[in-house]
Image 1: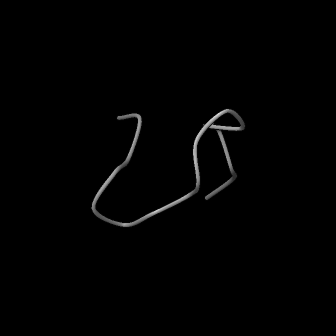
Image 2 (image 1 turned 90 degrees about the vertical axis):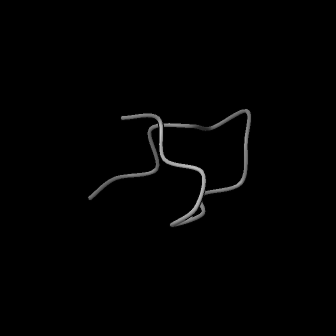
Length: 17
C-alpha cells in the first residue's frame, strides 16, 4: 500500500484503485 495519489490525500475511502 503506497500513496499512489500524491495530488490527493491518501484515504481508505478515496483509493485510486
